[in-house]
Image (tube, rainbow, N blue to C red; front, side, top):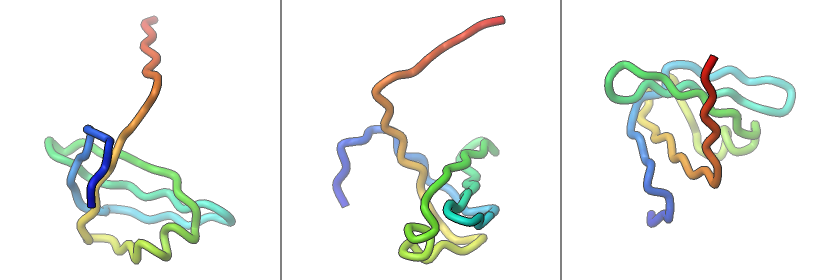
Length: 69
C-alpha cells in the first residue's frame, strides 16, 4: 500500500468501542503513547479489527492548531 501521508505510526489495538454509527479504535504506539480514532462501523468491520491485533495510525492533517494557557 502506498500513501501520501508521512505520519504512519505502527502499533497494537488495545480497545474497540462500537457505538450507533461510529467505532472508536485505541492504538498503542511506540513509547507507550495512545492514539484514538473515530471511524465508521462499516470501516471497522471491513478492517476486521481485533484487540491485540496490529494496526497503524495514519495521520494527514492540513492544519495543526497550537494553543497555550
